[in-house]
Image (cartoon, rainbow, N blue to C red):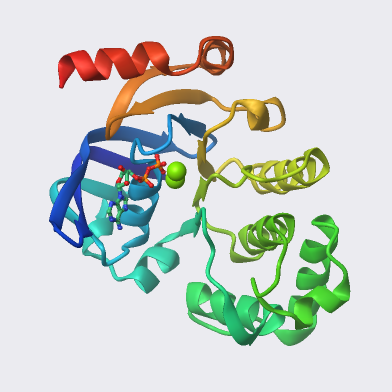
Length: 255
Ligand code: ADP
Ligand code: MG
Ligand code: MG
């Protein structure tokens, strides 16, 4: 079994006027087989948490720890994090002009495995992953994220998830901007990935809608840089009905 453990994590973001404290003591443990939905209002620090796990240079950990199977994730380079089994799908994926999807996926898989995949089986794997996401063969020849629709970006991420076989996937608003059909396809991708019970997911989202398609084992309300409440799927339903207001007010009262 694998475990991603975040303990009392404090993070500053670098701004034009100097560092600004965003994460204010995040505690979260995700085990294999679990899907943790992180839900919260805009600006609460959800993407900051994702970027910090990714090792983005703009984010400085001022205290706290993150371990992956007991290993210090924060001491690892971005490459090492991927090799250790962490996958991050960002809210705003970058365009890589001149790099085809096929070459990108192969380079990413080579980086994660430490060796290039065998060509014959690899091509079959890629075809299957793209097909599962309703992407046709031509898609593999396009430049990464260049001119992709919102839905295509997310489908591409789901293909990566399947082909890079990480232990833990952090999905930052994978559902935002998707129409209902694309949402179902993406959910199918995540659920397929989760058929292997040695894997886990941190599903960052603004909307409860995706929880109809992906079953969260835990739901966390994220407000003002920390986890304000934790529950099961029923908490997702409560948020759908009541919104975040109650938690935002409580966080203000405590600040
Ligand atoms: P969420 O993903 O929950 O919407 P973010 O992590 O994107 O929240 O942002 C949390 C807070 O950090 C916001 O107040 C945002 O304005 C601030 N922030 C994030 N990145 C930067 C940055 N590069 N410069 C200045 N402020 C930032
Ligand atoms: Mg946001
Ligand atoms: Mg965000």
